[in-house]
Image (cartoon, rainbow, N blue to C red; front, side):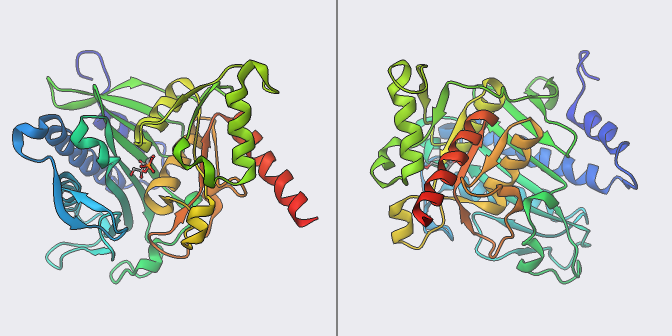
Length: 344
Ligand code: P6P
């Protein structure tokens, strides 16, 4: 306890006591992840003052221009987690291949995937960004891991979480026993428990989608959004609100806090490029789906539960429709109707 509040360190240790056979390895790993997020929070908060804004002049594996902070945040995650002997390997949005633990350090039984700075296109305009991470068990040869060891469905995740660098810095975690939120107390340099047992309202009147892609959407997505836009003059008989921050962490946190539905569906433009979606399965869709499901929400591609997808490659992209259960169920139903009609 600090100032009457539970610190994230104490919370994680108390969580460990519920995990059969827990050796403290996982707890120590999670604390190293938390440390990395504190370092990134500090850099994001100082922004221009410490010269970390702007483009890095390089591209990541996705072909996206990297910001300086993308590269720096990735290095922070590697340095914070490579030495303790808890990990067999790491994988990041910012690196094409998996990251092998340097030979001078012992290897462990976990795998860590992460998007070190999600929404980084917002960083130069001072809009919230975040970090997303997921922890899996290494089931293969943990001394000689390969990318294939990471290709496990989202249901195999041991832990998932995000850090949100917003007006305040927060961490939200699940280890499969619900979702808890922690706020960084700058005075003591610790995340403290402020949002115990976060739960997504099943109903919502707020949707999030990049409407500029509207002309490319598949029919079920267009049907859903059009009905929201018709408001109380249409079949929904209710007005809706729209948000789009272009920072998945911020969107998911809003949904965890007050409900909503977030959609980045596959569209005709992506299909023409042979893409299966915009967002990445291993370090965006799966960790966020674990958190959303644990908070009583739902997460689907529109045609299947995201957490049950058998990954085929490390940087695989998927359509994402997640949030308040009744709205996601509606969008899934529209996809089913559409596909059944199309098949007929
Ligand atoms: P668009 C950020 O680059 C990201 O991966 C998610 O955080 C965000 O929801 C989405 O892409 C934004 O995409 O096409 O609106 O820039």
